[in-house]
Every structure is written in structure tokens, then in C-alpha cells.
Picture 1 (cartoon, rainbow, N blue to C red):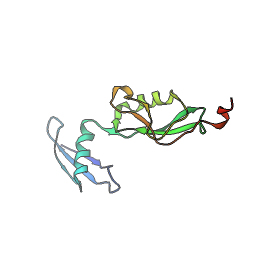
Picture 2 (cartoon, rainbow, N blue to C red; picture 1 turned 30 degrees about the horizontal axis):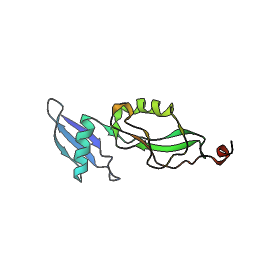
Picture 3 (tube, rainbow, N blue to C red; picture 1 turned 180 degrees about the vertical axis):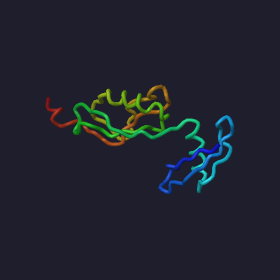
Picture 4 (spheres, one colour; picture 1 turned 60 degrees about the vertical axis):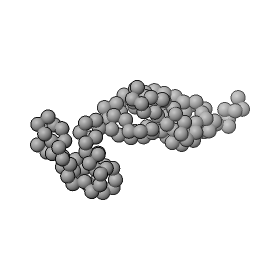
Length: 127
């Protein structure tokens, strides 16, 4: 039996064909132009993962939101649970690029980190 995927590692988007044994384990991957395509196909069949990028709410910041991402790809089946946690978390300014905002989310060994700065609002300092 074969499974077909489109590789998402680069803009080429190789059409991958994965030959599976009777236990649904990959025997051979074809169609990939590089080793990353083969690695992607095997990973996608065993435990698909994705980078998660979004925003989080900020209290007393110059902006109401800060952009964030996962430190490494997170298991695809944890994305909605992670988004629930992210959506219900409010951060306090200041926030700097690279700050770990939620360490080890869902005990996944994946951190949520800031990808933009959000300084403390000047009008907040006057109070």
C-alpha cells in the first residue's frame, strides 16, 4: 500500500510516495529531491508536528498583542490545547524577543517564545 504526501519543508513541494508494509510502517520514500523530504514523510506518518505561530495578549504594553511561536515544532494533536492555553494567558509588559513566555507547554518540551518586543506603555509609568 502507498501513501501520498506533499512535502512542506521548502517551496518546491515535492510529491512524495511512501510505500508502507502491512503494519503501515514506511519501507521506502520516493519523489523527494532531498533528504529532508524523506525525513518529513517518515515524521508525518509517525508523529506529525508543526510550528505554531500566533499572538498573545499583553497588559500595560505599548501594543495589545505580542507575536509568539513555538521553540520547536509541536505535536499536531496538541495544537488546539496549546492554543486554548495561549488564548487564556495574559502577559505583563515589557516583553523582549526570545523571552520564554510559557515554558514546556502541555509537558511537551516545547516553549512558547516571543518573536517581537512589546515595551511598557509610557502612560502606564505615569500612574
